[in-house]
Length: 77
Image 1 (cartoon, one colour):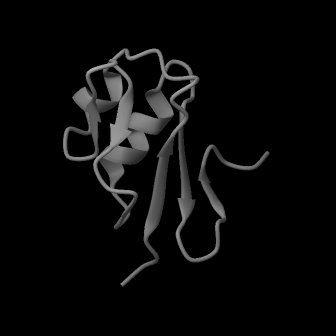
Image 2 (cartoon, rainbow, N blue to C red; image 1 turned 120 degrees about the horizontal axis):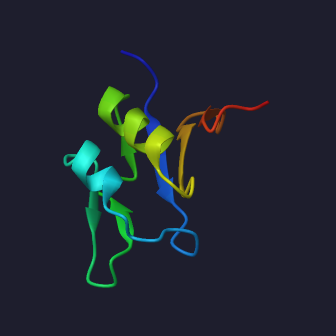
């Protein structure tokens, strides 16, 4: 089994477009303030969650490896 991901949304950056919830409905929900929240802080790697992070219009979603903190998205440049 691979390492788990830690998913975070910067709610100060999130504009509530809903793209993440539409792309990965098992990964994200918009709350009453129309800000995204991950459904689980840690989860197994998931291609839909990664696609949601990649397509966030304001890059509010970060994914790191839960055990090491190494960045999965956005990738280090």
